[in-house]
Image (cartoon, rainbow, N blue to C red; front, side, top):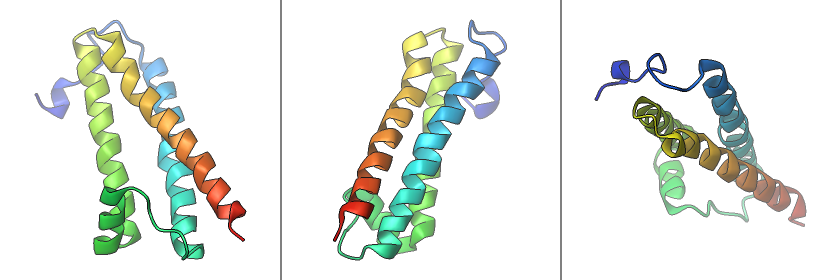
Length: 119
């Protein structure tokens, strides 16, 4: 299956809803988590990245590695969501943006707590 095969045209799902779901996931995971993680890496040297894969990406490629890996995860999740939509599977369709939004919200709050809680 290719990206071009993934479309909402022949599915029971609405493009507007899809856009709103992914805007929320982008705000929480793509912006909130990335910005707060970068702030921690740059301004709080006492704290190391807790995710081994992310830590390795940052160690090897710097902040570009962090952002690149986040983009790969994000694109993979969009692909899974569109794949679920194509099959009419609501669970698969909604699960990807929901998981990213929840993970992004949690890590953003946790990162802010670390950022402002370090004395």
